[in-house]
Amino acid sequence: MAGMNVGGAITPAIEHTGRVLFRPFALRKWLALGLVSVLAEAGGGGGGGGGSNFPSSDWPRAGEASRMMVGWIVEHIVLIVVGCALLFLIGLALTWLGSVFRFVYLNQIARDPYAIRAPFGRFIGLGTSYFLWQLAFGLALLLTVGVLIVLPILAVFLRAGGASSDVAPVIAIIWAVIVGTVVILCSCVIDIFARDFVVTAMFVRGVKIIEGWRIVLPILRANVGQSVLYLLMLIVIAIAVGIGAVIVVLAVGIGFLIVGGLFALIGYAIYSAGGLSALLIGYIVLMGLALLLAFVYVVNCAVQPFVVFRRTFALVVLGQAEPSLATVPTRLSAG
Image (cartoon, rainbow, N blue to C red):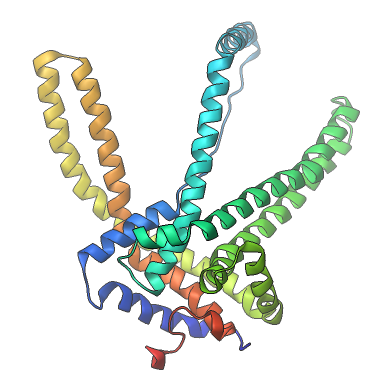
C-alpha cells in the first residue's frame, strides 16, 4: 500500500479529464456521458417545508379547514395509500437504477466513454449490492435519529407538560441540534467514502459492498490525515463546480428561453383558435415536460468537464493509496 497525496491528485485528474472529453472531442461521447450522469443521480432529492401562524381571530376558520381536510383524507384514504405506495416504489426503482448507473459512469470514465448497454448488464449485481447497502444505511440512520433525537425530545416534552419555565425542553433542543449535527456529518462522510472509494473497489475487484468496505477501511485508517484533507478538498471542488454549473445553467437557459418562446407562440396560436381547450392543456403539459427533460439533459452534458473531474479526482486519490485499485493514470508520466 502506498499513500494518499490529495494535492498531487489534482493535476492527473485534470489531465485524465482532458483525455476523456477532448482527446478526441466527439459530441456522441458527451451525449453518452451526460445521459449516464443523469441516470446515475436518479433517486436523489431533497425537500423543505414551511408553515404559517394563524391569528387568534382566525382559529375557528382554521379549525373548520382542518376538519374538512381530515374528512377529505378519510374519504380518500385508499387512494392516498395507493399513491404513496406507488411513489415509494418508483423512488426505490430510481434509486436502484442510479446505483447501477454509478458503475456504468465509472466504466465510461475509466475505460470506454461510449459504453452504456453492455456495462449496464454487467454491473447489475454490483449496483444491486450497493442499492441494498443504501437502503440498510438509510434505515440505520433513521433508527439512530429516532433513538438519539426523537425519543429523548418526546420524553422531555411529554414530561414537561408544556411548562414554559421548565429548562428541560431547552436542553432537549440543544441536545437535538448537537447530536443531529454530528449524525448528519458522520452520515455524509460515510456516504462520500462509499460513493467515491468503495464503489471503485467494487468496480475494480468485482466484489460486493461488504468486501468493498473491507478493502477501503484499511486504506482510510492508514491515511487519516489525507482522508480529512480529501474531504476538505471536496468542499473547495464543490464550490468551484457550483460556480461553473451556475454559468452553464445560465448559458443553456438563455438558449432554452428562445426555444420556449417559439413554443409559447405556437401555444398562443392554439389558444387564439380554440380558447382554453383540452388540446391546449395537453400541448402545454407535453411541451413543458419535454423542455424540462431536455434542459436537464443538455445541462448535464455541458457540465461534464466538472463532473468528470470530480469523479476522476476520487479515482486518482484512491489509486495513489492502493495502486492495485488504480483505474486511471495517477501520474502524468503514466498518461
